[in-house]
Length: 179
Image (cartoon, rainbow, N blue to C red; front, side):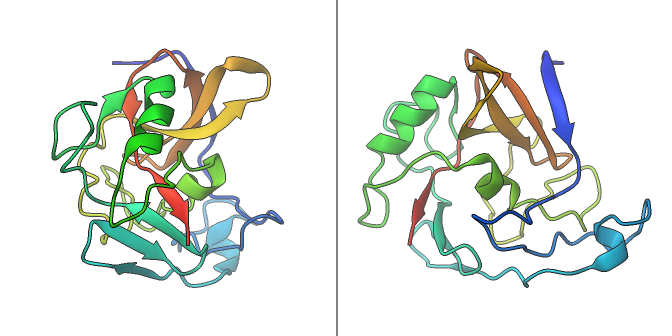
């Protein structure tokens, strides 16, 4: 189903002061100056903790990779598909691996999981994230769209696209916490 959204970026541009520049995985040069031209950045480093979480050594984050207890949001065993307000509540409610300080990731944090070396159809996410089977839709971020507070950013792990769309829509959730 097509959603009314604003597609903003297909390129993984993460060279911003608040996040280290990670390799995007893109190796083909589609136009001069894109990631395929330079192939720079830090190597991504993920490790499965064996407790439903994934460590992201590059960003010093811990990602949710277990959906066995969705606290009443959606079906246990799969990422819940819920509206933005419920996504915030869901992340605040989960107790995973002994941690309760989970939140929605920022736009840049979630986009950092996109592996642009993987072709369509996705998932275009690191293989360690085995629970990302829902690739037909978007995952919420906690980042509002600055031009309209009824809209928030999301990431599509089917194409690796970042877009902004209405918070009333239902989409998937992957929570994160700082290590």
